[in-house]
Image (cartoon, rainbow, N blue to C red):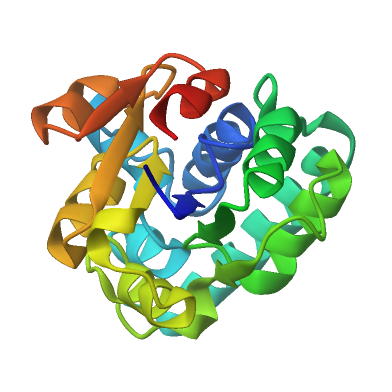
Length: 211
């Protein structure tokens, strides 16, 4: 059915969510006097860029960069030993490649960090393309990253699906005119399902049923 499957990274392929949210809370406690957030505001960090997230607390660009650097250092330290994929991630990617389906990643993470994460979990050198933070000027839910991936792939919109764990992933896919797929193990599944993704899967193995 599909000639290409594009994945979000955090919370979709790799189990980084817990570390990300715990480090986010640490940054809030350390730099912003433990500012209180609703659950909605807190988990929305998972689908936002670091600049957008920390700009909500201050307009001081120097402080924002300091917090981003501290956040990246802490997550890098923890993910080096704690990071793992969601079950069967590598099996699914290899199966797709065997079926001659192109596989790619569209993420709001920087390329260097995303590539390091993939090396840590043994998924490096498996993807046909990656669109990262620095590859676009507008980030999800803007469809720029997905549209850029589409241009690289050269397939029709009906031949590509994007799989993600945040409602921004689903919105971006819709705006790009491609199929979307949400995952039930998302921390924001309630918000994801409200966007009416084309497909919903309980685990990555279910991707095989879509091809």
